[in-house]
Amino acid sequence: QVHLVESGGGSVQAGESLTLSCTTSGTDGANCMGWFHQAPGKEHEGVAVISSDGNTSYQDYVKGRFTISRDKAKNTLYLQMTSLKPDDTAMYYCTTARFAPDILWASMHALEAWGQGTLVTVCS
Image (cartoon, helix red, strand yellow):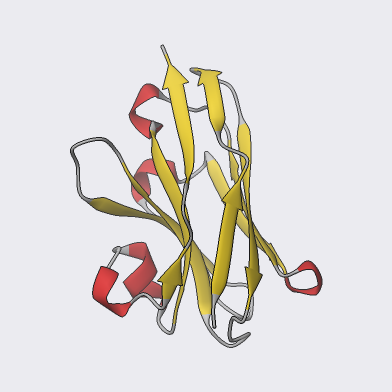
């Protein structure tokens, strides 16, 4: 059974940085992993994805600001977020899926599992 636990969220000022972590268990090492978020009153939105061989993809609105990485030995996924903006305020979830586009475009029906989320609040 897949189990994902996110951490690292918090409240920061615009322009500051945060690093989110996601500890995983029961995941298939061949699957892609990534992050999506959901802002209050809005739909789920993909953020970034990393494949099992380390290839990464990002949504345009985070390119150059966010970096996704994974440490397979530690079963941990990371999302380094820099130059944070108020529009980045959302609940962030880590997830796993067979195909990268399903994560990048938050195709919820195709995601294998996600955690309880960690809240990121960016104040202007």
